[in-house]
Amino acid sequence: MNTITLKQTLPEVFSSRDDIRSDIWHQELSFRKGEICLIEAGSGKGKSSLCSYIYGYRDDYQGLICFDGKNIRNFVVKDWVEMRKKSLSLLFQELRLFPELTAYENVAVKNSLTGYKTRRQIEEWFERLGLADKMQAPVARMSFGQQQRVAMMRALAQPFDFLLVDEPVSHLDEENSRIMGEMMLEEVRKQGAGVVATSIGKHMILEYDKIFKL
Picture 1 (tube, helix red, strand yellow):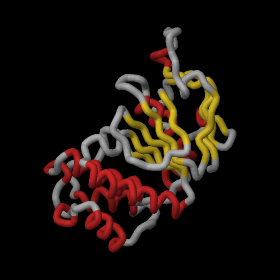
Picture 2 (tube, one colour; picture 1 turned 30 degrees about the vertical axis):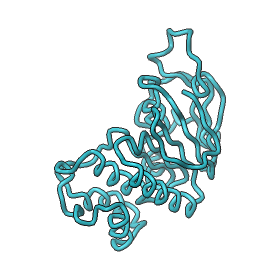
Picture 3 (spheres, rainbow, N blue to C red; picture 1 turned 30 degrees about the horizontal axis):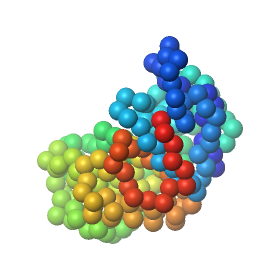
Picture 4 (cartoon, rainbow, N blue to C red; picture 1 turned 90 degrees about the vertical axis):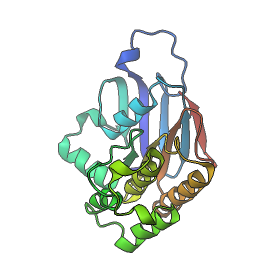
């Protein structure tokens, strides 16, 4: 997949409003493979909704969202399975980890779908992010910042053309944010992928190709 195009897209909950001023909503634009884009927005502006629309998790929007010109409303379950397995990866704002599984198991269960990474490669990620001693700890016993790092590793443990990261560093200090950004960029560049990141103020310090105001 090379492009994600939005055409007059708008959350249905905003349909009765006439005061929408946005670079995204009610516009026509494309996210392109290989580009790193940042979407800045205040709380309640719809950034998490946008990620969910693109990922096919929700469809309560007006307008069109197309992948390489194909309207995603026409996708069936099989299409979404393949898309999320090979083309799209998402780090949810609320993370959606399995609390009863260990940190390593949360990453491994995603990796098992494609066998994209070796166990050693995943272990190296844990080491870089300062979580080597937490690999066998249940996620439920970890802080939110630690869980964010696990969720990022899980998001990177697959092939993708586009990586969506919804407020990925909201609970991280500057150093961990820097390391996680480096890891993400390494994988993104390796795959030639595009990134759509959202932020309500705190974001990874990267050289963004495009910055949008939601």
